[in-house]
Length: 475
Image 1 (cartoon, rainbow, N blue to C red):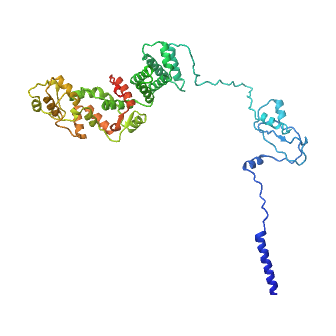
Image 2: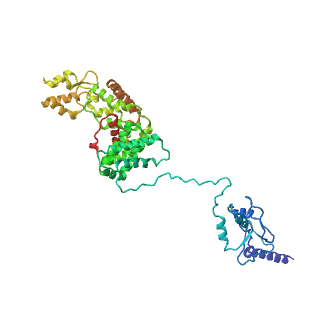
Image 3: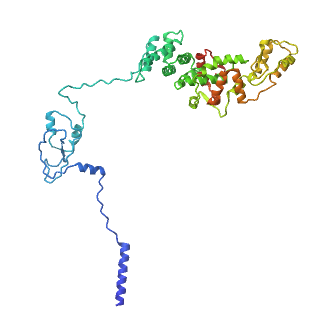
């Protein structure tokens, strides 16, 4: 009995091992995959398990659906009973004529060869619908920009002027009468500043792309800032582009200046003018407090009006390559010390010291000025570079006397201290003190004009102060 049980257990174990190693499960049958789009499409289809019959459709309406039965080419003309028929909605029902409407309203039996023609005819654009009341006429499409005018004939100056005005105006959608007048005014003055040239020369100038772009920038700047000073600035720059040599640096400066000025305002011009005045210009007459007061009234006071101190103005000037920003501050007091060292950097001497240095020689009173620091005096010069000419002018030829006078001028140097310098500036000129406050509290203390900024500042000073600065030493 036990042996039978052992044999049975061995047989069961053998079957289990065989099932583990040799049994292969039957493949699972999966339902066919139907895309989501197909489900929606099939949901819209309607199955008609009836014998297909050709029958007329009810009366035409906007909600009626035309149906088309698609069969293979070798299929009989009539579908068998129980065959499924799918109705496809028309893509774009249109208002056709009455015969065509009746013809399309019926179910049609077509083969595959005619399917393409049927679909193309169904997707044709709708024809215009005529109402019983009136027929809407199609409005003509207006062309916003005119085609470029190409001409090879000689035109007079007035024709060229009108062409340039028209070309600028057609670029914008909204033009006011004032804007049109401003464009005509700046263009006429730009042509007038070309001087006494004949029509052929003007046409040759305008034909150059660089000159046309310069004129368009001049027009744009004046339209955005219709000011008399700006008008003179842009027309002067345009004349230098049109009349200058292409290889000259000043021509390129004028061209780049007009492009940069399309992003600038009056405040930017004042900043550049002041930076040019105090960084790269020195007035030789500034030898006394009275001379500085006259200087401040003429050059500084007109530029202090609405002088911007916001950081964005200086950031824009640096972005447009009109200025460069330094890492260290340079207050106005230090700038004045560097430009006029004998007036702001040294205290001076007494009259007794002067008499001892002269050794009996006589110095005319007009060549001696009061110091800004107490009861001292100074020679009427701005720095040591002017002393040789000064000595020749006052007829001091003795070398020892010259050396003693030079030592007297530099005998009492002044250490820079901002509060003390501000006090001196207030005593010399309140206008300079106001400028020092604006300079030291804004990014003017770190800004220096580039060659482009110097040129724009020169244009502004020429029109605002009626003085032309020579930039030839930097060109």
